[in-house]
Length: 335
Image (cartoon, rainbow, N blue to C red; front, side, top):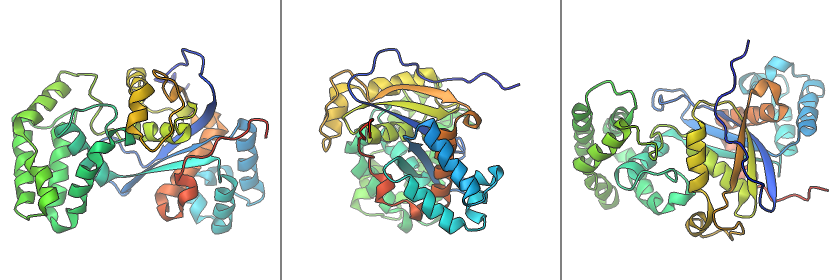
């Protein structure tokens, strides 16, 4: 017997104006195990197919390309006979109907260092809505090749520092983190990167850790990339013009409380001013995220297509061109 689905964000109010429905899944998420994984990239894929279109696409892969049901997982799909031809057809079929968000795990951790320890932790962290912090994160990330093994030690110390189930006492974690920071400074990584590292303050770090220890729910989970990935996906499909209804494979990270906070953060004029390159048409206090329904992927062919797309994108990120990175344009429902 299946366990009941958890999480989600019910649609409480009527959608405002245009709306797009998308189905999503991910590949490469490994919880807080961000540094000890064979997958350096995480992908979050979404499609705006209706059920019949998804069924037709899956049917074509099984009949026209002779893939059996168990081969529609990305690993077997890419190793199958005629995989290159099938992959080309698959990506062409999804052009204008899909979006892929790629996350480099190391860069994600760098953005967390900046957004949590140098700025005010918020649900905007790691998204385009915190773009003011992006140059700072990029400056530190660009210096990683000059840091040798100390770079990995610094990221590992940060992971241990903010891990919710910490293995060592707080003071010991703080001490180890700043020892790793100081080791990086000895490399003289450049003015921009050194300024980021110099800006880390022990008292501020301890204050953030205290909030995490007190389970301050206004602070998002530091090592959970799915929440900013979902926000980026919704912002891409919305483009400031329409609300987005999400159907998502079940994920324990997508609790009702977190999704509600994410929805509120994305609402209204705050998102408009932060996304300065977007002409924002949604009214103030209306979030691009209208609601999210959790499903079992076995029951929804749209999510199965998103799962396959996420998997092939993670294994072969070079295939994800601009057509799948840009926000798909609105379509005429009658077209």
